Image (cartoon, rainbow, N blue to C red; front, side, top):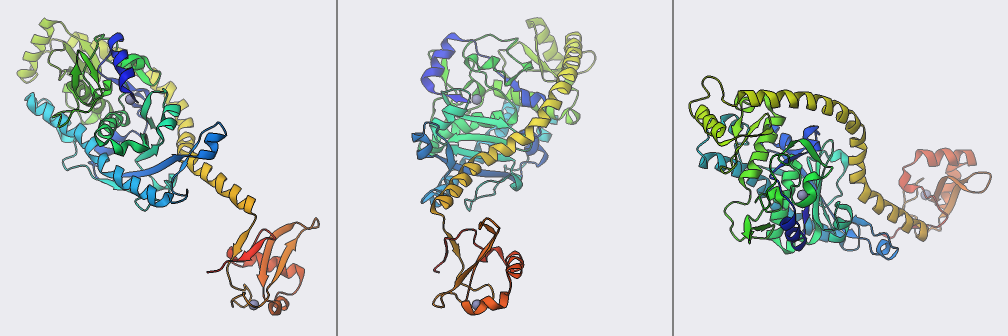
Length: 465
Ligand SMILES: [Zn+2]
Ligand SMILES: [Zn+2]
């Protein structure tokens, strides 16, 4: 979640900020997390579905504002297409930036050898996203998207995004990550870029770390810097500082034109720790022996994604140990083993308890997320139909398949004992009635013909086409 600038500045002045934290979803390895998907697919064919929504005015007047899909509102289809088109080019660069920054961070620190395992995991080609609904059809569960993007009214985002200051938010479900962005974000493309960079971090499994968010219930309590670090104004994208700009020792998510690097060493620490956590089997001894933070001013090492505070002496000794190719006994072995043991015990207990609970709820929730907007639309459509009470039937006699108009068609309805329409009504030529025969035959006839010929109201009319 990203917060509005002014609010964020106040908070950062007063509150401690921390560099990175796993989301509970990362700790539980929720399958919908996008980072493992991208790694496994080598960054190719990441399926994205985009639903532009709009505030439904009637519900707003009724006091319970709801977002509805833009597609089916008057002129909405074309508008939806435009929004989808505008949003598409922002997605890949945001995700690409995370991987590019990691590569350049490793290269600049001349630590390619140490992170050969990580580099081997990263997609070797530019990321390629597959936008599955460019024709502006509503996103469906069956489309199997990896990333579900909703463009919503900023008021709706503030309402559903945990905080009334939220600009965007991300939820992780069982088979996809869902990011909700402000519908009008395209008016400030640089801001949308920063928001997406931050939300991409969430979809990877990193939590918010600005202000009081560090202790948010969505954040994990084991894989976190919160225990080690209580400094203010750490410039990190997950600290709401994707612009990398520092003013009076206060960082904020403002737009810095041509900023060379929008992600920081803290974000990269978080990313490598996620990769270590998601793909332990692909990693070298570095993961369990430990590695030093990319932030050179920090006396912090990470062991199996857990932060470890070092003193100057230990940091020096460990630096030498790594430089010499990790020969002999690691100078932080004792500390590393202790924290590994702790983590193993803690994680085993946590994962088991949480996983069971989560798995049961997840699929329901994600179907709901997709269905909510659809359901609103459906209800509205049904209501309109009901209010109008008319049903258009094709200009074709279901018996002889000739046009009905000009021949005074008759209505034949299958009714129950209460005179209510049972299986339906058909419009046929007067001369074709005898071909159907009896009342029982009519019921059978209605059941067997194409449903497009069948009306469920007395107010059926012939569509003029
Ligand atoms: Zn956030
Ligand atoms: Zn006929």
